[in-house]
Length: 107
Image (cartoon, rainbow, N blue to C red; front, top):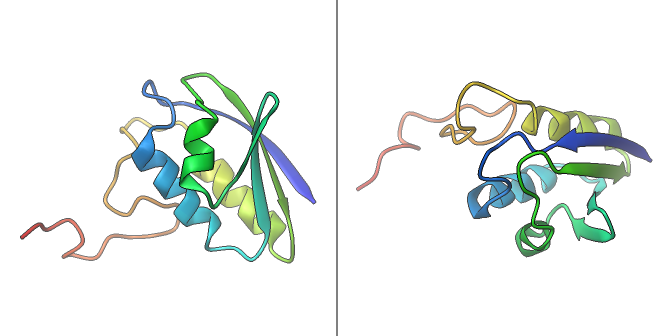
């Protein structure tokens, strides 16, 4: 089991779009990923569970991963929560992913 502590860096907190991105990130790993905020615990693959945490700006989340790729999972979640100058809503949405030329096009 690997754990890390992250701080929510976005002024909007973890809203629906970010919860979806975090859940999608968690599905890339075989390890189980849990997110804890105080007494609340959410499965990292559950958008609703992540939303129910009500994590606002500055909230401290404990992330726990256990499984065959737990180290990589914890590192990816750390990168997801790393503060950046942008809004965090880039087209790719996940650490290590790049957007295809058509991914940001709407019809």
